[in-house]
Length: 283
Image 1 (cartoon, rainbow, N blue to C red):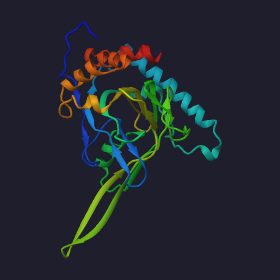
Image 2: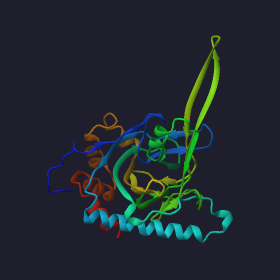
Image 3: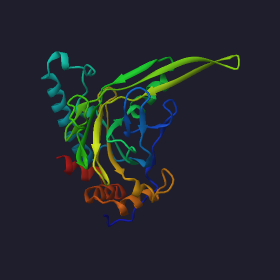
Image 4: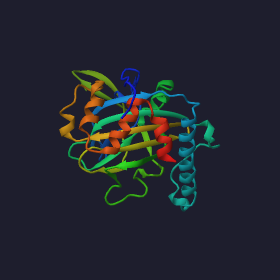
């Protein structure tokens, strides 16, 4: 994959949200069935990739992303008013305002579930919840889509409003809300407080084997774009892996991945060539 010596340890670990039950601050995968019926995939390996923001490759990625943002917003304007449910900041940011964040995330699929959801609550809301403890809830409409998906497809039947975009971006309702209750335990009143997250948006389905793609998430409110290589593996590969986050998990997935495109893209991570490779892929 690379003619340079791989440097595994200079990738930065992904932070987790204390408010949201240690939810990683990136795009993770779950399956939301309504109410308390939510299951999460198991994280195997996740890292942030820090890169030179002023590089020509990053500028090319940002330009490609912004074209998809523009197409998405124009498509929303063409919808009937009663179908324009997503809300966006005013004024909108400009292309040069968007900060790129690169990441890789490898996880299992959600066991015994066909439908999956991209969940961004940790990445979107962790700083907001920390800075405003009195807040009871928060809602955002990031633009979400898979680019060059491998083994991923629309939900069945397709859901134009709630599916993730495929080689395009589409708005996704992402929210959290605080639940407070008082229980009497042994004659004592116990005050409980917890943040609930999950929505049946950014939906997709998986085929067998290793699947994934480039998951782009643009938050116009905070002017950030998460560019994440998301790889989901079957139980057979998961059994070969070590504890969550172990550095050699990336190499194990590369050695046992049955998808050539995913292997190539994981090689970009090893070689730190993600911006350069992705700029050409999104052009």
